[in-house]
Image 1 (tube, one colour):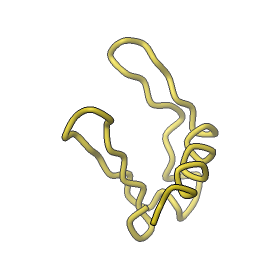
Image 2 (cartoon, helix red, strand yellow):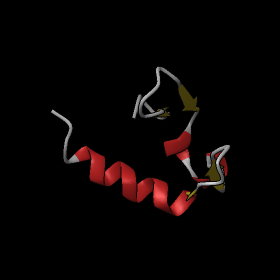
Image 3 (cartoon, rainbow, N blue to C red):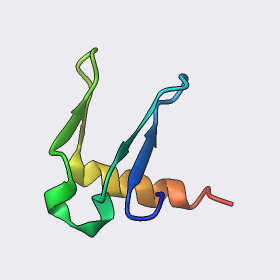
Length: 58
């Protein structure tokens, strides 16, 4: 989380992207993230992942 934005780092790469205003409401969300190899992460799973990762933040 960077301000109201969700910053996503791609594990194993230097790639990342930012979803602007993610934390201002569902209208700023995407329904799903889909990788080139067909893996899918749904919007509802993103928040669960963010909460789980927050436990590891210093």
